[in-house]
Structures are given as C-alpha cells and as structure tokens.
Image 1 (cartoon, rainbow, N blue to C red):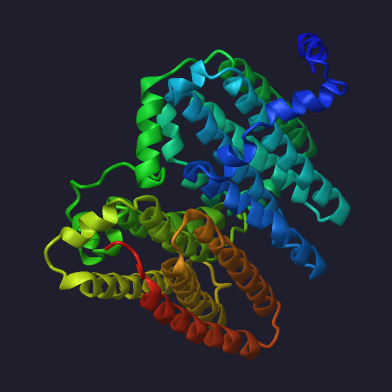
Image 2 (cartoon, rainbow, N blue to C red):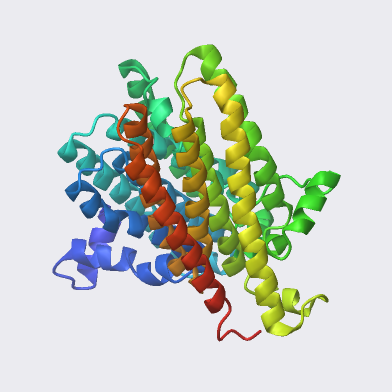
Length: 440
C-alpha cells in the first residue's frame, strides 16, 4: 500500500490501514464481476473449472488438468478485458471517486489469483507440462487484453481463446527450456505495457460500441461472408438455430473440416503428431455451446424471432428450433465422418475403431451440449456446459489412447453407444423445456 493511502487511513482513525485499504479496493467486487453478464459469463466458466480441480486430481486425470488450468486463466483474462473495455466505454466511470483505481486493482488481483492457483496445482500434482501450458495460457490471455487495449474490436474474438486451448499441449511439447524462459519474460513485459496503458487510457467511443454490442450479441464475431452463396444457403437451412449467431455458425461449420485437413497434412509433412480429429470433436462441441451462448446473450432477439412469419405460434417456433438443433448435430457428425475418412488416407494410423469412436463421440457430445443448453436460461447456467466439454474431452482422449495401444475396443464403443442414447434423451428433454415460462 502506498504512503498516501496509509496516511489517509490513519487520518480517518483506522487501526488497520491495510485492512481498510483492501476493503476500499474490493468494494463492489461481487456486483461488478459476478452480476454483470459480460464478466459473469467468463467468471462462471473459471469458477466451474476451479470447482472441478478437486475431483480431477482425486480421480487422477492428468490429461485434463492442464486444459482446465488454461481454461481458468483465459476465462479470467477475458473477464478482465471486458472490465477494462467497460472502463473505456462508460463516461460515469471517470466521475465516481476511486472506481477506476478499484477496478484496476481487482483486475490485477483476479489475474494473479488465477495464475498462482494454477502454478500451485501444477507443482503439487507434478504433472509434466502443466505449468508450461499454464504459461502459454497466461501469455495468450495477456496478449488478448493488450490487443483489446490497442484495438477495442479485438474483444469480439474472445471465443478463440478457448479454441486455442486445444492446441496448447501440442505447442508446449515443442518448447525448449530457453523458449519457456523467453515466454516468462514476455509475460512480464506484457504485464508492464498493459499496466502503463490502462492507467492512462481515457474514454473511447469505439469501446462504447463494443460494450453495447457485446451485451446484445455475446461478444462473438467473425468476418462477414454474406456474399458467399453457399454460406447463405447453409445459414438458411439451419434457421432458426442460426438466427442468433448469423453467418458465424455457417462459417465455423465450413472452416472446421478445412482447418482439420490442413493441419493433418502439415502434421504428416513435418512429422509432428497433432490429434486433429480430437480437435475437430472439441470444436464441434464448442460450436454447439456457442449456439445457446448467443441465444442467451441476445435475449432481446427472441421476440424478434417470434414475430417472424413462418411459425405457428410459440410452440411452432420451439419445434422449428429443436428440429434445427437435431439437424445441426447430425451435420456436425457427418462432417466428422467424412473428415475422419479423408484423414484415414493421410494418416494410416486412423483405424475403423478410431473412426467409429470419433463419429459417435461427436454425435453424443453435440447432443449433450445442445440438450443441456436448451435447459439454460442464464449465462451462468450455460457455463456449466463447460463441464460436459471437459468430461467429453477426457472420455475421447482416454478412449483414443487405449484403442491406439491395442486394448479391447468393444467396451469403449459400447460406452460411446450408451452415451449416444443418453445424449439423444437429453436433447429430447431439453426440447421440452426450451423457452418454457418465457415472455414469448
């Protein structure tokens, strides 16, 4: 605590100036971080990951732990980017005494707490590569915050923070000790430049537009592709599921298999083993989560959808949305089947058992996410779907490892079949609860 703060506390008669200082700096922390929808969405994911650390450690799931630590770190980073953007977007933040200083202190505390927690867990568990992946996630999160300060519209790309986590393990395996040391220096440099920038950044009109658009649309953006006829047709075929995301959903559906095949070819040419089909399965689940993320964030658009012609009342709109959800899950499964078949010709290690494992895993993963998403009415509830993605990731990776090692494939394929049945029941049950009790 600085000297003036101590003197101020003593002048007020405080016997514990440090406690008084912390009370002032943490004023409104729960309201700002866990009630504001923009911040709460990311902090909910971080808290979910934090809660799940104990069972993951208890049940010895080393392949999942680095992913969860990275998820916590980038979630907090995205929440910090939201708070800093709100500081630059709201004129009243300049007028309220100590508000700006309190928010900057809380941002630093959240980032440091996430990093310290991840570091302690990494060293206590002794899982190889966990701390390196945590450093990568920290560098990625800080880079995102800095880019948001330079160009406010970078915040629209927050979803790519989570997609990048799927590549962390492959990237960390390529880092030498010197590169890890350089990464630490880069993180320290980012902390310094971010601090210098946010302490002098004034109100910015672009930040205000980002703030309002993110409240309405959930902060998801990709370049418009309306001019491409195929994208438009695909978007129309998935209506009304695509209504809340617009062309973003169609772009992701087209980009995911192309990205997977490109990485598969590069992996074969360079000799670097990259689990491309695993990444595609995870991307598919994240895409399904984005469907309901945008639906919940754009809650005002529900009435606009209801007013469109073509629905026979509220139930007709619900039925159409549920049919589109089922069509989306089948489409993503078909993409996995075709992509895995093409990867088979590129990489002979892909067997029929692995092909079946990934195809069924994609089907039940998307079914679980879409069904659970239909039950959610708030961003905090939707954050719980990250638990499904984590469990799905653990099941797929464990099954892939054992099938590759030559273990008996029947139990894993039987498990995939059982999960597929349960996922379809979840999707059916969620369809009965979608928009139940809402205004529309």
